[in-house]
Length: 636
Image 1: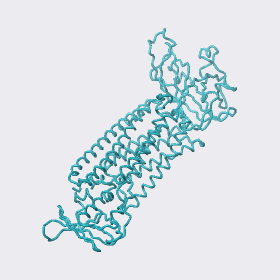
Image 2: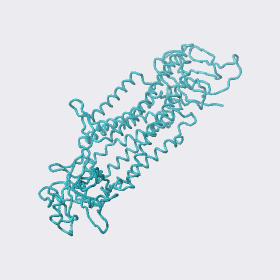
Image 3: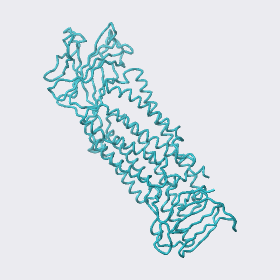
Image 4: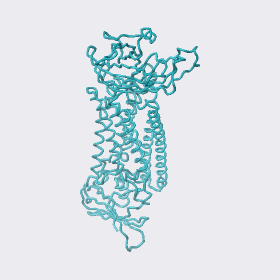
């Protein structure tokens, strides 16, 4: 029977000895060599005869070098043959293992400074992500019963409409409710919209007075006839952008007693979703809203006495958009370059990539996909689908990130026979993919329809509201459960490592320090991973608080902006660090240790051990020594 592990060849010495080719005969499954993989070819063969009963390791050299032999504690034969052999390109272990502590600290400090800078950009430079502007609809009078073409009613300006202030005035002038048009011009006078605003969300609120004879019925629906128009200067004609008949369910409470003494007091009504546009490509927008009444068809009956209509327009700040685009433009080439460099290192290895290395590449691709600043095109083009496209990109990235964490921890828990197979993780990755697909369908049900009808909202109907709330609640619960499960997996990995550390005291001091250093680095990386996951949860909670800010000295620190830019920068730095640290190291065997020196006796053995500690050879099992060490149960 013959089993071979990966062969590695040392460079030829400068003088005295021939080129060195190390080969050994032993069992690949030996736990001793699992912890200390030798940099030479391994053959499994049975020792025949011989005295002493124990296996013998001997070095056979040419060109006058000395010979030595020693007895080992397990049944294998190790033979080291020295012969002239050219040095092939052999990768050492991952950079996280072979980079000196000083260099790793420098890299960590640089990444930490970039992280702090990402938070400071949002907190001190960028304005608040969004701005809310309040509008009170103007009551215009439409005296024409039937009109051949659409007439647009302007609330102000040289072509402003005929206005009334109250409905009492309309009753005095015998103006019917069907002839009243609520007009809202966006933006306010002497201002204009900009494509840097990216999107526009409009919220609707009714001012409804309480009347004993005209109360709001339970489950009352308001039917709205709404039209949206745009233009790019103050003299052009309005161009219709959308028109729709929509229904919104009223949810109002009257906090005082419903008596005649309290007539005229207003209900407290919830805000209603009204409109969302995925691109602000024009300078001026005009909304004309009608509330048609038809008692025979029970349209707008039992909705109370509506006094006014108020709108709140929310759009992204132009200053924040510029900072956001600048970050994307800077980070895109950074991640793209490190990703190409990482995969080139992987392809130069003699073995095929393992699952963990492929997943790291996929994570880099998803990060690059979300980084590409295609939003620049939205400045010059009316791309209303940019919001939906952005949601799809974010969904792909977060799905890949969640799957990566599962596989990253799982590959350090699996037995050797179960590793390197994506099918092993179907129970964990499957729900992530299914949940992401459900959220995609939910997003398509709203923003997909809004591409044709900006007034559509899944929150408008009772069923849609319950479905949307169910999706949000389930998503929040699943996110918390995922984080707890990830903490449990990290705990298992740490416990597995602690079990393996019981073998460290039996090692030589050099080897013990070497593996303790590797374990510390790996644990630190796992804790950074948990920190990133925790920051995501915190970011989600704080992002629900609109318009919050802190005052820090003379500066106003925008909480939302700081977390937007900080978390976005954190993901990029995390992906950058993973690809950099898990890339194969370029280190080779040291020239001083393998050039011009003949290996003699025990000194040769110590030299070989020191050489192995400084350049850990990448084994066929995986990219790092920790990867090999804590998944050894099946081999044992």
